[in-house]
Length: 113
Image (cartoon, rainbow, N blue to C red):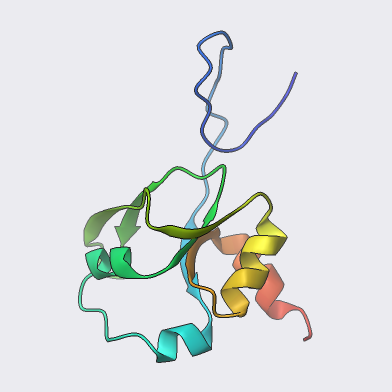
């Protein structure tokens, strides 16, 4: 048996959803400081994205008051990485914005510099 996270397009394999988890939009302070104010999540489409290669490119964003907006990032990615540690590193180096698993962002942010 193999467990894989992310998209899987093979029609020769049976897959089953085991669960889901929340993601957060993560951005380095320096990159954020140089960007215009965002009034709607769809404005994030114009930002430089750092994509985790195995993520879907369609995100459902939910505000604190429950408003939902969909954001599709396809060819806008500035960088595409294969591991979460690299995704976190490029985001902290102000290379762009990323949709990161919320638990990973909290774990990484809690580490001493």
